[in-house]
Image (cartoon, rainbow, N blue to C red; front, top):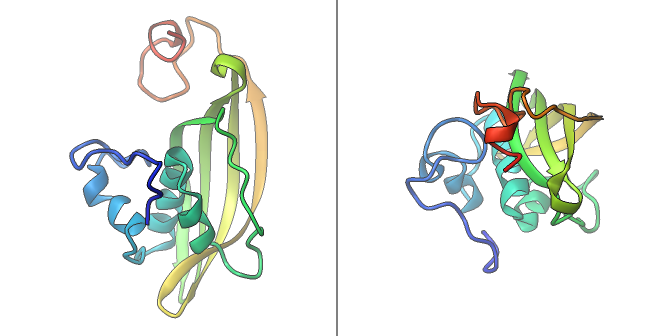
Length: 161
C-alpha cells in the first residue's frame, strides 16, 4: 500500500518504529495490507507510516467516525523516536500510551514530543485507530545533552550535525 513516491526502508533496514526488528519483519507487512495483530502493532505501524509519509495507510487504519477528510502531513516534521509507555486490550478495544519525539521547522531546529493515550477498536478482524488525547511539548536540548533520538550519544555528535 505504500505510495509510489515514498521510499520504504530496505528489507534488512531497521524499522522506524524502534522495535529493533527489520522493517520487512515488523511494520512492512502491515503497510502492504496484512492486518496488525494488536493495538500496539497497529500504533507502531502508524508511527512508521508518519515517518515514511504513507498517508493512505494512515487514512485506511483510522476509524471512519473520527477519520479526517484529508491529512496534511508536514514534510518539515522529522519523527526521530517512538517510546511505547503502556498498552493493553480487552476483547475488541485497545489502548496505547506512547511518546514520539520529532524535529521540525527550518533545518529541524525545533524539537517536540507528542505524548498520547490512543484508543483502538477491532472491526471485521482489523484493528483501527479511534482517537487519542495528545499533548505536545516543546524543548530545546543543549549540545552536550543526550540526543533526544535515543542513540545514547550527545546531541552535538548525533542529530545536531
